[in-house]
Length: 348
Ligand SMILES: [Zn+2]
Image (cartoon, rainbow, N blue to C red; front, top):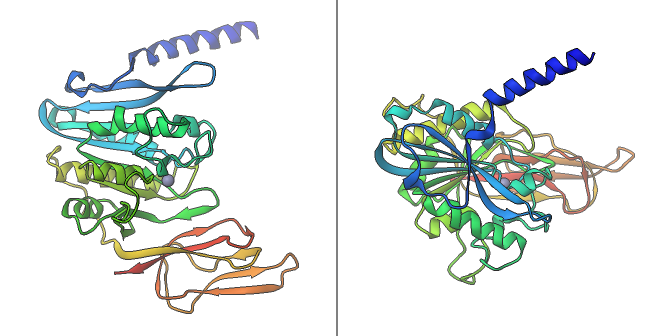
């Protein structure tokens, strides 16, 4: 037993040695000009410190081509329970042809390290980081984290794809949020293998207070960094279909940006474009059954939810208020008054 244990440990040591994390450099600032060309560089970027004074590092991978070109940033998991973007970034880096790359790809497979470790959408102070940009240099916990995400990472990008999924108790189709009136953003949106594109400016209206908190996408766009948000399916899981579709969409984007010359993947299927969308909520509490599927097109008046009490008596039936497509839906039957039913997209 002891011998086996020793052998196990030694194999572990060797394995650890050959796969050590020693090639991951700890940095305080991301200096893309100093990143070596023609290889993948891995970094732990010191962003903040935890409550024991220990550094919190954000993992960053950089592929810098030998030819000058744009910087494409891929960011995943600003909501800590939204994981499908992580294997997409990892696989994109596996597939990059480093000898023929123009420009730089920066992958951040875990932007919100704090919430990732809590399996949580929200930050440690219960704030939604993605409603806290631009953050504050000397603000509270989420404000400083958001400020540093932008200051230390995102401001280096020329283009960005911010990767999300549905949140707990819900599932999503694969859909893109982008301002389709902007030619660059519209092009980035159609290159993904999405089911649905939601035409959505994402920036605060002119009437909103200048400093009103906003999303990372809005902050990036306001700073001249064309950014789309892609929602890849469901929370807290890896979905292989989302991975390959996500990877192909990003490789398409790299070809379109002329950062890669190899032919684009298959033409993306035509996504359904929606001009707006909204959630429909229960108006009483109960146990909810949703008889429509993701991506299903519903007619006005079609049944989208049946609410029962604990005894199985139907207490309310919910109908689609207008024709549309199911972008996302609730998976949690238990709903108090105001529970989510479906996220309905209205076609353009
Ligand atoms: Zn999200």
